[in-house]
Every structure is written in C-alpha cells, then in structure tokens.
Amino acid sequence: MEIPEIKIEFGSVKVMRSHDYCHFEVVLTSSEANTPQLVDELRKTAARLADKAVKQYQQAKRATMRVERQQSDLSWRKSLAEKTPEAERSPEQKADIKAYNDIQFAAQFDYQDDWQDDEES
Image 1 (cartoon, rainbow, N blue to C red):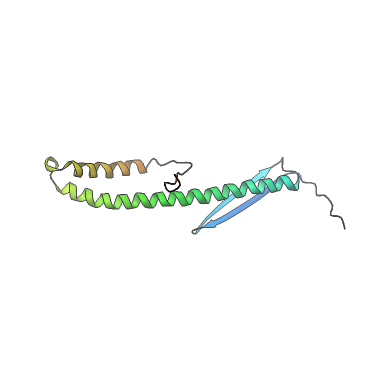
Image 2 (image 1 turned 180 degrees about the vertical axis):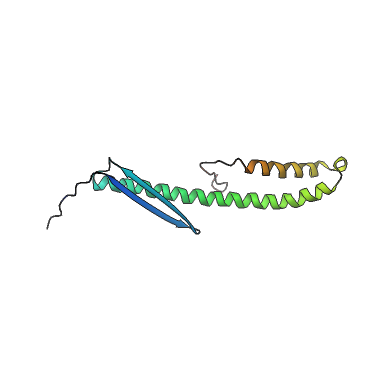
C-alpha cells in the first residue's frame, strides 16, 4: 500500500524541555517548510534552541551561585571592616568594602546573551 504524499502549506513545530523545575518552549513556524524533510529541519532547529536555553539556564544558575557565595563572604568581611573607623581601615578592609559594592553594582547590569562557563574556558 502506497502512502499518499501530503501537501504541506506551512510547517509549525513545538519543542518543550523541562529542567530543574523550569520549562523551556520553542515554537517555530515557516511558510517555506512545505515538505516533511523541511518540517523535520524546523523541528531540529527548535530542539537546538531549546537545548541552548537549558544550557544557558544552567550556566546562569552556576554564575549566580558563585556570586551569592562571594557576596556572602564579602558581606561578612565588609561588615567587620565597616566597624573599624574609616581613618583606621587597612588597605584589605577598604578593598573588601569596594569589592562588595562593585559586585552589587555589576549585578544590576548582567545582560549576557551567551553565558561563558568558567569551567569550560
């Protein structure tokens, strides 16, 4: 029995990934995807984008955890340094206060598109 060829006007695919209680969804539509092979390529593209979203989420989560650990440690050292009168602070105490403030300032401008994983570099 021969399967009849299906005429496709346009292709639409939806790919979903779940990771760490987060859900990532990519939906692509193309008027050019008018054969099963082209729809399959569209699906693969959507899957790659969903996988990339999961990887970026993982890298962002690791980066956030590193920053939180640094902030916690620096917060404690900063609070100790601030108890010392400003004129009597050591260079290390001044550096701790500045480093903490720098991390707080930089955190508000984190617009990275492609997260760089320190472990892969």
